[in-house]
Amino acid sequence: MKISKNIAEHYIWGDRCDGWHLVKGADLSVIHERMPPHTAEVKHYHRRAKQFFFVLSGTAVMEINGEEVVLSPREGIEIAPLVPHQMFNKSDEEIEFLVVSQPNSHGDRVAAE
Image (tube, rainbow, N blue to C red; front, side):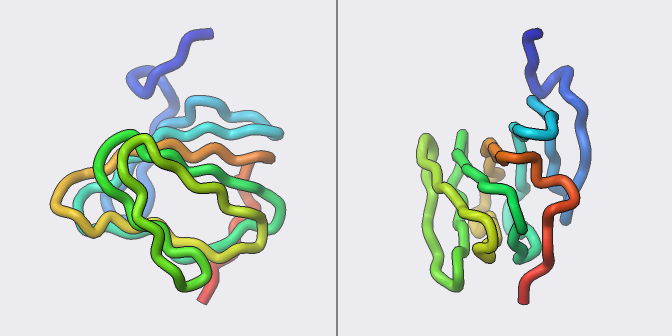
């Protein structure tokens, strides 16, 4: 079945951020997310899920184990299970990106300090 963020299940997370479930299965999740300027995700890790973040527009900053990685459009990064990470939008423009999780990360998230 054809899917787009226009018809996908939508949710709001964090501080005014949006997510759209493009694929929502137990073994695979694909989410299109949007972060307004100067917002951030909570630092966390996943017990089982491996994730891949791929920037569609804007410039994202991913902090992984205390090190910042800048992601420009058409760039991505894989995050292994148990690795603390946090996504930031430190720019004046919104960012959009895909988050692919395998298996689904629902209920697998642990807050990190």
